[in-house]
Amino acid sequence: MSRPLSVGLNLVFWSEGAGGVGRYASELLPALLQAETGIRVTAFVSRDLPGQVTDMPWSGEVDWVRFPVKAAGSPVHLAAELGAIPAVARRRGIDVVHGLASLVPPVAPGLATVSTLHDLTWWHHRDSMPRHSRAVQRALTPLCARRADRVITGSDAARDDIVRTLGIEPRRLQVVPHGAPERRAVEPTPERELRARLELGATRVVLSVAQMRPFKNLASLVSALAALGRDDVSLVLCGAPSGHSVELQELADRLGVGSRVRVTGWVTDADLEGLYELAECVAVPSIAEGFGLPVLEAMTRGVPVACSDATSLSEVAGDAARLFDPHDPRDIASALAALLDDRGLADELVRRGRRRAADFTWSRAARETVAVYRQALESRAVR
Image 1 (tube, rainbow, N blue to C red):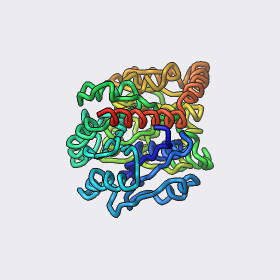
Image 2 (tube, helix red, strand yellow):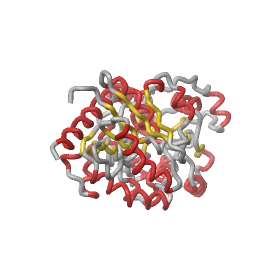
Image 3 (cartoon, rainbow, N blue to C red):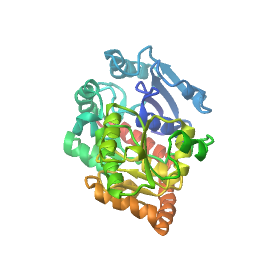
Image 4 (cartoon, one colour):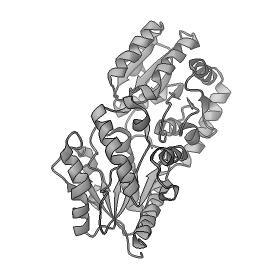
């Protein structure tokens, strides 16, 4: 196929609360516009699309098709994603439909389809999402992955799990690593203001950025703070709140470290940048991840990282992080102590981290994604 591609992106899921898949969409979409001369991108979205998306400088290069449905929460958005998109795509002469959050039309005559299946955390961990959402995923994701011409995932660990769990043929799976998150164009909240508001005093701060779900293993991180046995260290946990947030604070209180654990929920971009600036290290204790953007986010900001030696995290971190056993709070405490007390080690990991993060770019991810589109078209042509 010599002419430029015409690509349709299923972004109906994209809303303010889309989390990691929303970040994936916001980074990949503009990179795709630069990945190939003449490429045309149509974005299928819901009425819940965040307003700032269409205000971005590149948004005028995208053909936006807005369905009058919610991003989630009713069967109507599924009808749009699985039924309306292929009909509209064919009328517009689109070559490939790509679902950035796993769902693509299982029946799409005349179209190639690509599904990005980030991970199967929701399959293995019931607490990873609400019961209704999990039931929908279990019903539709395997079907979409098996019917898609190609499936993209972000890491070797995720690929192996998808093959093992869903039985997807390895030849149809392509690993395309994400890009490292760039620093946000905001002024960070001053350290003095953050310390006063969060009542951190003069303590040294360990930061963890994750949604408050049990599989993120933040309880082990709280236990590690207690095992550390030091009064000069505080732990800040920020990310999407849930009922587990209360459980984490209650655990900290029982272990005697409640006064040094801050469960903040969502924070503004300015506060997050400020927390990265004042943090002495970042901890990522998850027992399940499809990729691990928080690892790269810390590395790009020059903060040393301690993370789980599990699933994709060690794969993303390489030799640029202090790894630990996520099931052993004492091992986590040992890793934190190493970064807090050994300035030479911390500085070396910062240097390695910057080099490591530079290997992950969204321009590379977009080029490799376009290559997958062409593979999907070729496989469809020979059927």
